[in-house]
Each structure stands twice: as C-alpha cells, then as structure tokens.
Image (cartoon, rainbow, N blue to C red; front, side, top):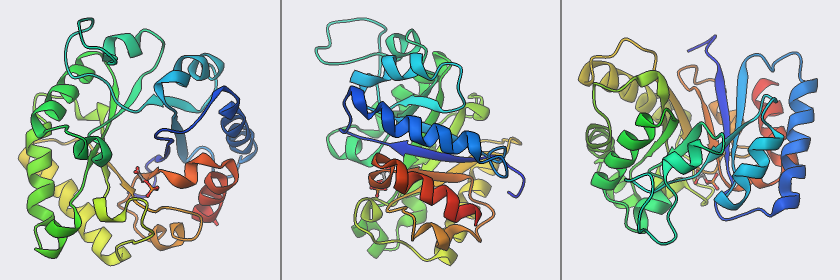
Length: 253
Ligand code: PGA
C-alpha cells in the first residue's frame, strides 16, 4: 500500500568474508545521504552465519538491519552438529531471520520443519521473512495459488502476531534465472495473498509481502507500479553495493 514502509532485503546466501562489510558500509552511506526517500524504506542484509555477529555489532546503532538466513528448527542447545538455534542467534543481537527459502526447501526442509522454525523463531521474538513460491512445474500446471495457500496454511497459525511476519513471494523458477513474471501477474498474486491471509487467519494487520526472484537495477522498473508490494528480497544483486543501491535509486526515480 502507498505510504507503507518498503523493505529492500539482500540475501547473500553463501557469500561474504569479513572485509565484505565494505559492501554494507557503502549501502549505509548511500542510505544516510538519501534524505529524499530514506524514510520510506528499510534495508536488511542477510550475510552468512560466520559474519552476522561481527556485522550486527558494527551496525547496532545504524539503520541497516542485519538478518540471519536460517536456523535450526528446535531446541536452544543440543546434539545437532553444524546447526545454530534461534536462541543462539538472538543472543548475538540479531532480530530478523529468513525462513523457508526455496534453496533450503530443495535441500530437504519440509513444510513441517518450516512450521517448527516459524513457531520457534517467533517464540524467540524474531521478525521472520517467510519465503513461499511455486516451482516451474507447479506454475505450468496452474497450481500457483494452491501451492501458495498450502505453504501459508502449513507454516502459519492464526495465534501468531502477524506484525512479526513478512512474506517473501519468490517463484522458484525466477530465482537466479533472469525470468520474471509480468507486473500484472505479480499484482494479482500479491492481492490474492493479502486477501487470503486476511480471511484465512482472520487478521486485520496489514501483512507485508515482498517479491523476490531476479530483482536487479533493470527489472526493478517493472515493479514500480505495483503499489500493493511492500518490497524486495534480492539475491545476486545484493552482493554488490552498486547494484543494490541502483535498485533503490531506480525504484524511487
Ligand atoms: P536472485 O535470488 O535475486 O538471485 O534471483 C533471490 C533469492 O533467492 O532470494
């Protein structure tokens, strides 16, 4: 909706080493200079787990949000080699987390696991970016709406505080492929999702819905007219400060 704060979220995936903080530094100085628009949007960057503590300390009093990319689905501590719990992430000062990314779903995260992750991260007071999206077969078979409904129904519960949930609609076939759905199609899906959440979970809150999948400085123009959209989850293009800044610049141009 017009007037609502937009989110530009960078998902670095498996990218970044300590000196990559420079990327965030440059984005931060752009943000500080962007007096004309910077009250209308928030920036979040999700670096890998190796960097979030250091980066969140450096960005503690700044406007850029440092987010985690994923976490384990139960227990605060336990015999789960290689895993990190929301409790541990919360304790290093992180308040945002991405859950249910299609790359994680593809490597074995089931709806049940995602459901547990949402429950557990909300319990630990996180704000969650919940990723949903159909794959190319589902799209071809015209199952998009059914898939999205099922993913939402299984992940969420009407008892949750929906102010802490941000949905990222990411068609799997669009991630990293340069393929993008038409603004008209996207608008329809966003409106459908907002209505469905309102009715199914009986929520009056304005739920934020972001779009993700091949968002870059060129494709961003396509989305400018969709006022129902609350922002973007950006993969590839978020690894370069210039690309990320250009996305924001072009969006507000
Ligand atoms: P992409 O990735 O922007 O590289 O398509 C988006 C995402 O996976 O969140």
